[in-house]
Length: 306
Image 1 (cartoon, rainbow, N blue to C red):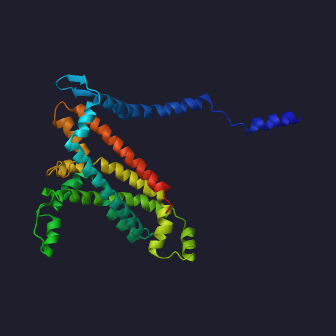
Image 2: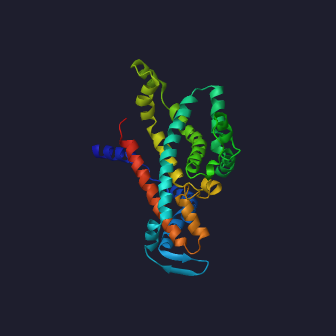
Image 3: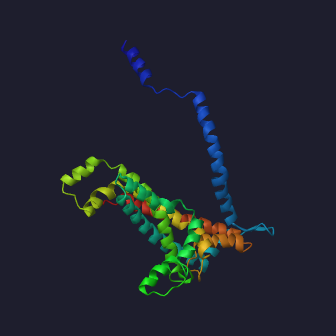
């Protein structure tokens, strides 16, 4: 009798198996996504790696294997090393500033009021403007007759074309991208702030955590750690893939002061004939750099105790 009761309870606790129809339906829904990823992600990645091992010039039918010489050529290229240096500086400055600025915007507009919602919508406008359109606007902003020179004229600063200066061209592009990306990440932090229970803030007030710096140190930053991870990962990935603004505004100049890896890859693919294999090798080196940066910052943010 006890054995029968035991077997009955065992059958009741056993998870019901999925029917064959359910499994088939799941596979059918997965197939389109799998085909899309295979056609536009996995196959291009594998094909690009294969090309990086060849001297690849399909226009003149000159294709032959060269091993890892393309990678060696890229690593010895002064243009590529300069582009990596530029993009690392750009990433460090832009990601740091836009992260803190996005958090500041989120804190400033965190109140649930009509004025706050309106201000948040106005600040968010640059995030929905296309990068090319924003680049064209900032071509005028930093020109001789642009907005920056107009404002500085009140302080006696003579006008100049900032985008033709090897000193100021890259900082101008950094300012433009911070202006257009910080509002986007503001939404991420706003969602995180809305998820913090009011009980936590009330308990902090009772415990004496009342100043803005103390609340940031003990409440906001620890509880928004995953929001910060998302913002930094997206920021690093986007910064390392900088291209369209550079292409429209400076084309990598003046004197390679704004030259970035994707400009190097673009030039080796579409400007200099017969160097598509070199461009493919450069793209994989850039992928490795982005992956290492992402892993490093992921560990720093998650393992540090604030």
